[in-house]
Length: 504
Image (cartoon, rainbow, N blue to C red):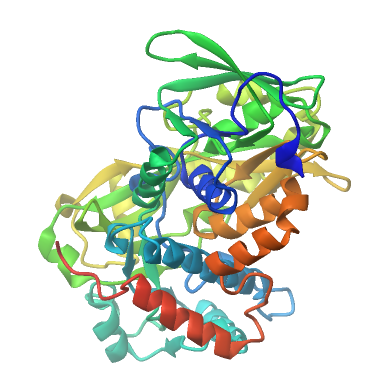
């Protein structure tokens, strides 16, 4: 078994780099599966989940593909491809199961601190977009995971669902919307911190804030030697470990490059920044209770799909619109402007240049977004909230996302908008690259990582039994099992105490 390999020194069995939702999920899974494992977690900031997982830096939608139109592209023949949406919806059900297990076992004490019930809606206008949404609805209805979706073009019904969106709108405008009442709002920052708070209390787990991982190299015995610097004291230390997970958000790519594993060659990163408009008028905030997603502008990255979004952050109901995309050479919100230039290496320059040439519309879009004035942002908001006034909204800086650029035999390099797990052939190191819908599908991503990196362990009866206890649907497909879907959704709704969002 992988965990039984010897390591020189007395270092931890596992090192997790980055204290976000991915490391929190992997750390929790490993300690439940193998309580004797020793784990060290290193985070460059002074708190957990302050970058990509933070509520203000993360869409927090609980991405289940109920409302995100970028997961259901229209093909050239006019039909709608739902494969990605179905896959994401199933993965989110896996996340809900794991979170419910954590609540039932008192690992998380209060689910309301991180998850709320909120309808997920898609809203479009114009003949072509209405036709697309209707086709999307009909296609998704073929899958049991979406069976409770509602569709309407009726303006009176829409006024009852989303009054802010309909007030002041031209009554002759053709509009349509879909609605899933079982949608959720998830504060991944709060969830991550709850998991780290529990992990830190367990024997064999240490959490180190203000620690920057500067380098990592593979030793002759197959272990990893990691150099870490304390950002407060400036002290340096060297740690040796059997397994490394790099879950540092935008900081993962530079560390993957330092690892020098063959599987990491050729990957590049394209950073995209973001901003929100945040409502400061409590009366307006109270009038909206939904996550309303629209269609992205031509050339926009999928993470920039506009949405008028009810959130619960730090116990307070909030209303956001955006995100507005931008460009910065930083890979992290708290990163360096040299992140992008320093990430360019001999092995990835061709994929990066090729991807850049193939994505000129994206570059033009980002330049236009950076040059936006407040009036431009208000105009975009008024497409979803016609009565919006400038004085009721303020600008909030969102997080950085680094989209994956990878080698492609045909194009030289392609820009990927999903997540990518890169692991060494021997399973001793893995890194997570990319962005959406990462946080929402973190449990499935980490289960796949376990199969790659802890292959022998996963196949043991002890781990199989435990995995099925934590995730009742483990090893089974939910797509053709409506009874299981209904049973699991009833259970997770009850355990997570999902109910209508209220003001604190």
